[in-house]
Image 1 (cartoon, one colour):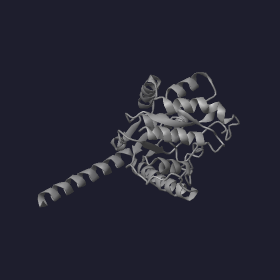
Image 2 (cartoon, helix red, strand yellow):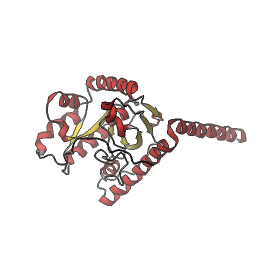
Image 3 (cartoon, one colour):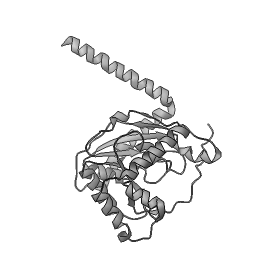
Image 4 (cartoon, rainbow, N blue to C red):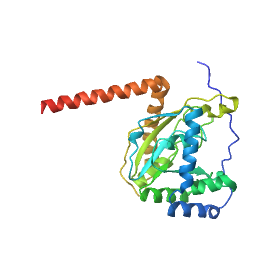
Length: 266
């Protein structure tokens, strides 16, 4: 098979030199305020864009719990992944975003009023975890990428970062693994090529809450979550959307038959 072309991206900046205090205002706002109408406005606009140009579809969005603390854990290829993962749930998803995006101007205004909060690149950012845990403690929904930054190759990472495991253990929130298929070539819109994007939500996973998990515990949980993402992604890659949907329908038919048989036996 021919190798996938590398996705054209700007050079990554892996360390933000600005001090912690520069970002305190954004964390304070995220911890004390819910997303404003800006969230719904942007979500509507970008969802219409995704439906029109990327023909985005989803599988099993009903698996996202509609109340209580939830962490959405998707793979990450594109800047559009934030919007793809949030398009198909009524929950207002709070996103961690790299701190370089908080550089002033209209985009910063959109992020802050839309409920986005920063993660300082290249730093051990405890404030980001405090903010995420605060949101989850209030019953909110946070999205966090297992792989950290975007993949530069169009392939899933070999191993996830431990941060998702830490947040899962500290919060005790339900984790919903999410596979986003097709977004690796979203940037081809510049060449008037628009890939079809499919988002599949997996079954929620809950880990026993642990206030101070070790690094090994964090990594073990991250590995387990990423394993579920890989299973979802490989299904979309090998079967396609129609194949996965048919498999889900068959599983549901089998479950209904089993329930009827159990009811009849009772």
